Length: 395
Image (tube, rainbow, N blue to C red; front, top):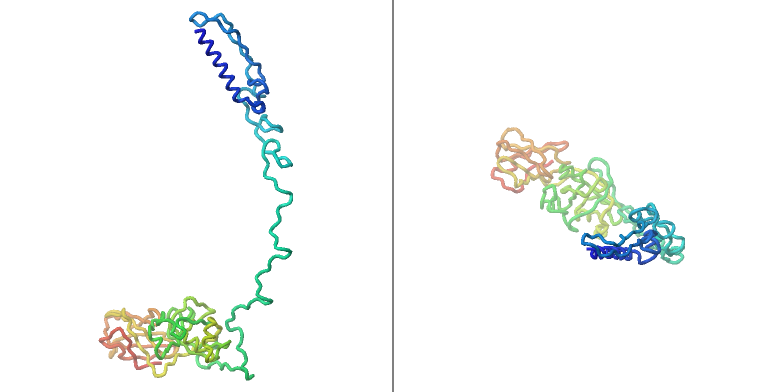
């Protein structure tokens, strides 16, 4: 047993020696850990050991002197385990918390921590374009003019006389207003097929004859403006100065207070000097003058086109070609009777509707504008279909 005790003692010694050697093979490293430059045990006195004990009885007692150990190894100014690392003014660890990294005044490493990358005292110059920066795109000495929509008057004729654009017509009520106009649809067409007023293909036929317009909300009036007539003229380049009379048959939802008219191609060309229709259309948008006028369709009477939604209890009709300044009231009753008139309401566009309250065809209509009322008798027959019926009256 003494032999084994002796062997265990030496194994413990060499294990401790090997452990400290692994952590102190570099003198600088050993210093950084607060150990001495010499013994791996720091500044303490190396342990001394007595002579190996003699083998004794099996009880483990021997005649040798027990080994003695020096004082515990010193780890700097603290005791026990190595103290927290500290960056002092010199390499190594002192006491306290590490200060922020310090950078020397010269490139390289200062007191232990790497500095930020160092640059020359003068930063690299910005890209050079010569003594003068590149110029902005040039359009010559004068920038291109903004698009003109009628602000320039037409040139004087070569014969030296002052051009005549005609005087504003005296018909209609109110004075001339100013706005802008565009055109839509086919170049020589009727805009759209009937548009939002519900006239369908009637816009292409007499008396409309494609001389129609879509109108902004102030003129369209949620359909109340359908069938109203306006005179429109332009007096700028390529314009004849002669007004064209157009009928509202559509809504222009993209227009506004300063852009009231979106004319059919036919209407737009009608304002041009003969032979310059294309040049006027190429301008796209032009300044115009306009005024409201009574519609006048000579030889044409008011027509009623039965809407396909009509049935025995409900009637809807699009009212077309009425002269005057537009309808304000419409009523229906059974023809050839003295029955009460059933008021109709504007459904959409030029379409008026009513619940029939038990009456059956044939139907007669009472029409009212701002100053006059007319009655169209026996317009829709008893066996009506979804087609157009022409009355024998107009305003």
